[in-house]
Length: 96
Image (cartoon, rainbow, N blue to C red; front, side):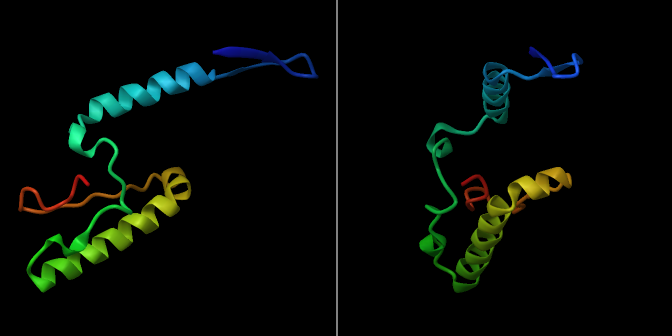
C-alpha cells in the first residue's frame, strides 16, 4: 500500500500496482483454469463445432450473451452481477 499526502495534509492509502497484480494472479491460479483454456477468448469460440442445429443455436446465443457480458463487465461488476453457464454435458464449451 502506498500512503499519499493530499493537499489538505490528510493521508489516504492506495493499493500499489504490484499488489493488484499479485492479487489478480492469485485469483487466476485459484480458478484452476486448464492450460488449454488459459488464453482462450470468447471471440475464438466456434459454436458450429456442434452437430445438432439446436445445440449450435444455443451455443451461438451463449456466445452472444458472453460477449455482451464482457463488454459491460465493469458496470455489471459494480452491481454485483456475474455470469454462470450450466450444462449437464461435460465438454460442452462452458469453460471456453
